[in-house]
Length: 426
Image 1 (spheres, one colour):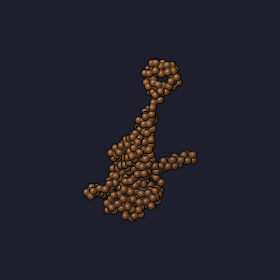
Image 2 (cartoon, helix red, strand yellow):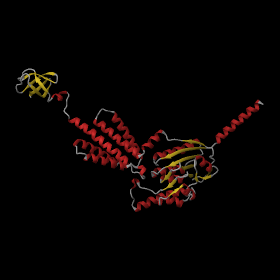
Image 3 (tube, one colour):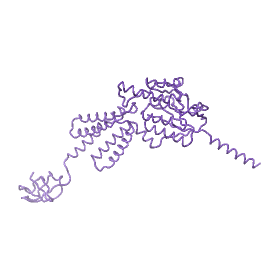
Image 4 (tube, one colour):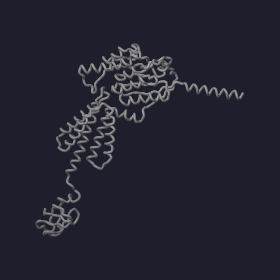
């Protein structure tokens, strides 16, 4: 009887182990930001992690206003070549996947949206938002439309309607997208999404068919690494501009107060961080000229005192430099005007104030050492004809004078020659 019990326990353990071994698993990430190089790196890392761990699918919970075309193409390339099915789920309720987000949604093996979400508006925009001439506009539209058709058709979705998002900037709610075959599922939450997916046979981009069963799947939510979080934070153009401006101000303070060390270290670190982030963004490096010109104008204002004219010019240059610094295709990827003004005006005021203090300090009369003795008033303690003794600044000095000075007369120090003063009667 005891042996039978042992055998039952062993069988139960083996059954549980086999069930755990065959349970589905999903790697999940959240992309709630503009589409830029760190977004592409994050998605690539999730797909690679799914391959290494043998996961059944990758789930990308998406919420984005759009982003950079190069990063979008990189992401789509990774999704189309992913070794496991990729599910893109626009969520939570109220979220949107506009512009680049629509491209990513349509490229997924399974495209899903939560109720109350929207997608579309994928018309290409030039960097900086400038108006294109007709020929260039046609070329960019045709290229983007062809790119959209290249993966929407094989996914079995509505090619003509998807293309209208590129050419006409059309957008759709979750129900409209479902009814017109732009997406596959509308799910209220993750469990509902997995429930609807389970049992479906998915045709992968390479033609292979995969049947997923994700009910009760183990979800491995993968956050960004610390490096990715820091870079993602810095890739906000407003933050990058702020870090650059603070770094420039810290270096400026170090140059005006050599040996302070701390401002110099902080300035170098901040500027390097800003340059590293800006190197990943569509940056107009000509804007640096405006930013540097702003600091020159601040210095000139403090030196010449033009009643604020040069200072206002510096604030204008710094503001324009900030606004033009990042040449993003959507407003979320450019420096906000209020951030530019909020940095430029206080920074201009602080810089002018610090510079004026430094200039006044340099113009002040030296009050220490030999230079501090020049012009000092003393008293003759003996007759000086031509030599004698004087009492100056609490000390008794040997002195000589060109004309006779009587004892008790007040004298002015005109020169210091070693340990002897040249004086004259006041």
